[in-house]
Length: 523
Image (cartoon, rainbow, N blue to C red; front, side):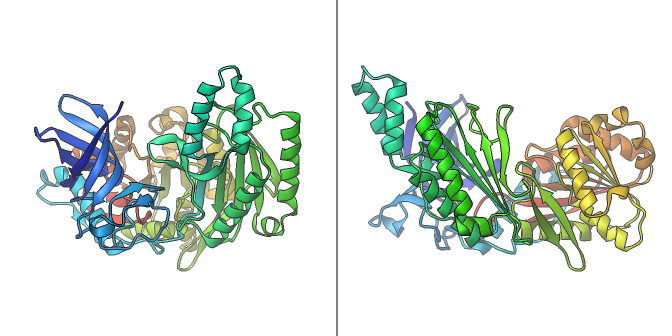
């Protein structure tokens, strides 16, 4: 049984945005869940070591007024709230996707600026010429900024409890005969997983992070699904039907994609007929037909709670199976094709700000561009487009380990008439030269190497590979990161190899969360 500690005070925020508290004996408590300095919280201990405890926040008794200077705008932020408590704050966690919405946006930016600078504190303490931190740039939108959202189907927590009790009482009934009737007749939900509890879903009606159109589409599909009386998938028994709903929107194109994930496990003849009738209702609904550019059904019988896996099968219900999005800059724009599982920045207008800022931090626009971790798209197509306007003969070298991603990247180069200036390599970055000797000629004219790695940062072999190129050729290294902690770690390793960096530019892409992007140029 998990240990619950009540009335714990968070005295600071540390690396990885972890709240830090302490036991009466001085032992540290590391608290996850978007806590703020000065908060008094109730926590659940999930791990005990000799030196510290790890815990998750389960409710907040009080916030420090210095930080809680905003308004909680979403009615689903809390499951319940005690109106009689001091400052009206004692509450249980609800959706909790926007953990910081109790702060004004200005206060959020101040805290993010501090967190970024704190990540580099160790490096700066060793340098004579300190790294300079530019003032953080706020997101163009603080609400309705997400272009992608994923919902999960489930049943209400109290009905799961009743089902477990019914199982104990119905010893003579098999699981197969008991579960269908229960889940078909139980109140169902479709929204986000409750934090720290994968099998529980928090039911809400709309989200302030996605557009009005996306909310409208979600509401219609949710109602049609539930009115069909097909059962929702249960994560514990791994049975039944509706699993996930993903909506992706082209903010600058108006195009919209829906991907409905279902499982055919244990679906009988009657339920199969209900599914066919539901598909017909999707087709004839005038709003869905008008607003949805492409509708995809993903059949997924895999046990893991993911949409795409080796056993899933994607079928295009209508449309082309993809949508387009544009990033619009001052004098030019770039178009990207977005497939159901391809990566694209979640905040479209934030991405425009992020990359236009990165362009301004570079200098000497002459030479080739190497893009590591390019994925299925590359913002550096935009940079190549800009350089094309200057009559440049530069090439963009795409390096990506996933071959399917390279195929999609090639399509995006074709869409923007830049195939002749693009060179594609499917390989781990540190083995690119070994696997593709033809890359050696292109490296001789390299102007900038771009790295935008996963949250865990760079592998040491990649840092070694880039540093070895630096011994022979002079180029800029543009590092964009969604995690300032791993960015600081990697930059310290680069500096040990002789690189220098002048400044870091934080950019907020995810208002009301602790996440923050950073840009740095090493030379």
